[in-house]
Length: 316
Image (cartoon, rainbow, N blue to C red; front, side, top):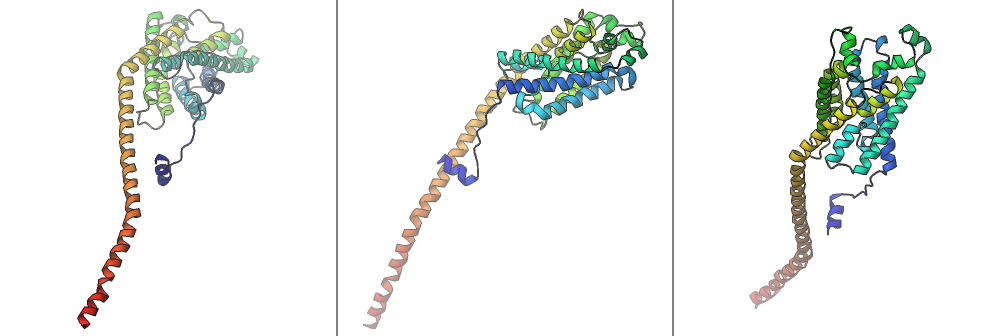
């Protein structure tokens, strides 16, 4: 009956197969490559343009939205180990997939940084007054203290120490992961989640750029540190985003996940009730069509039979 009902309503069932892990990893590699290429590239060539914080914020947002539009349906468009951790703690992916995503994201970020590193003109190094290409790449490194953009902007007059930097990175990472989990929630009425996440990236970059050069993404921070040779402060840009992601995911799971399950169960029950009612209607309509036609014919025959007899009696 359900198949007949589906055919009556014009419903076609399509078997959806989830992409393999390899395909998802390639998607994460591509998305992280794009995101790192834009953000790190704008930071490396920052002295040559006047975009600064606003340009970096918009570049990161556009890069994420473009990458998510291309491969988001395949992997979920994490492009960030912090988001992958939040997705695992939020019950979206398995722990095996999370670690696999981390590896793919690191590969994508390092490849993007390698492309930028190998294509920087040697003449530019001299024009910028740097000793080598690593010196040019140091402008893309996340850091605090003397590596904080505020220190460079004020020529050493002010700087952010490790604790304010840690606190800011935890907060912005928690907000980013919270926006991702909320925008990609099945109950969300927002039609295009990548726009929400991209907008969060832009806004959070504007807030934190002067503090730490906006980390929020351990893969991007690691790639920049590798080619700049600045490893001393990288620990903060792994610890803070992962702590922030964990806080956001636990908060989401505590206050959002149970309601989602109840809503799904309620919707399922309502759909079942609607389906049962429709089945009854179809059965009743079929019986009426099958029974009414003979009954009507017999009634007409009986009604037509007495008339000649009555006329004969009248003549007699």
